[in-house]
Amino acid sequence: MDNLSRGYREAVPEDLLRVMDTQDTERLAKLLADERIDAVIHFAAYMSVGESTQVPELYFQNNVSGSLSLFEAMLQAGVKHIVFSSTAAAYGIPERVPITEDEPYAPINPYGESKVMVEKILAWLDRYRGLRSIPLRYFNACGAEPEAGLGERHDPETHLIPLILRAIRIGKPVTLFGDDYPTPDGTCIRDYIHVSDLAEAHILAVEYLLNGGASGAFNVGTGSGHSVKEVVTAVERVTGKKVPHTIGPRREGDPPSLVADSQKLQRTLGWRPKRTDLDRIVSDAWEFAQKGNS
Image (cartoon, helix red, strand yellow):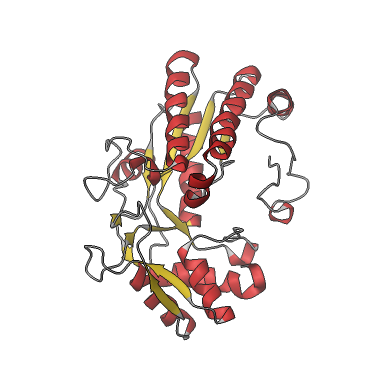
């Protein structure tokens, strides 16, 4: 189900797509009941940190109100299991890295705050309404499934790997934000997780809930970090081309390092990231980009 405001009709087989909005509670409830849905995976959020600081009300309307409408529809239809797309932005600038799930909420932008609000709503609905939920806190989702024609397509694009690949394709330098962080090479370190590993975590989470598993939040990351400069080097290695780039000032609120401790997910759901090699991630993204998809 998608309202296609930021999605692409061709990304989903026509017979599977239902076009509607998360705010349409009654239609959603009818859809869930008519299709005899057992569980929901909820990705329907706006996700640009920068945009969320410009129009916070848009993010609370879509991400929080939309989620609440969906939860109400689920309760009306008797659907009691949901996997929620959450984020490492819930932690803000963490005190410890790698980050464990017991790190306190400390969002520093409206996007992160909107996800925290939804996690808190889910916790109360679990306690008083029996709605079982697993928020999966994504780190830097990336890569692609080029054979399926699926990859990153954001407008505007804000993610590092597609921006670097676009710079190679069009010859216009990409700006790298900050090279004076307290990291080995001065650039930010992030935990890059292949989207296919991320997808597998969702499948395991749904199965866990349907088999009677308890609600709980899980980090989804590889447990190892790569700097921005290391990503640039990997792109040059995979593509055989130099990355045109300039160094800009730091972006406000960018933590020096965000790396997940995903041991809880591995221990509880039996999940293992299989596509952790940075070159593999870049190679898949490059194959998708070369098809004119970014």
